[in-house]
Image (spheres, one colour):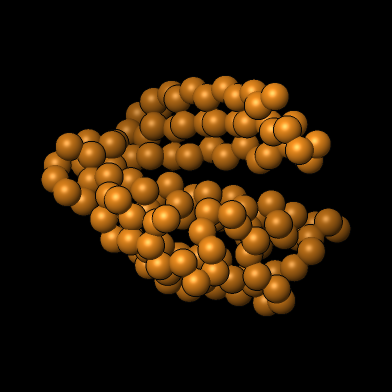
Length: 128
């Protein structure tokens, strides 16, 4: 059984989208809920040419990767907690060719270990 809900709201010049999904198919832990913020400029840019959707995808990927890093480390950037499992160490640029065009985004790095994400494979350079 896969359940989900999603909604969005506009606040001033910012649109916030929230989507949560819990996957009970494999008996695993519930999946994370991500809160994505999209500026009005990005939203209106969807209709302004070829790069609109690619720019939006870059912004969304950046926010999801940051949320996954926070989840994996169990702490926000600069936050000191007992549960923290590691520390951030900047980010690296990553390029990916998708059906909406070539996109470039930042992948968070850690002092020890690496970000575990299922959004793309380690050496993947184009969308499957």
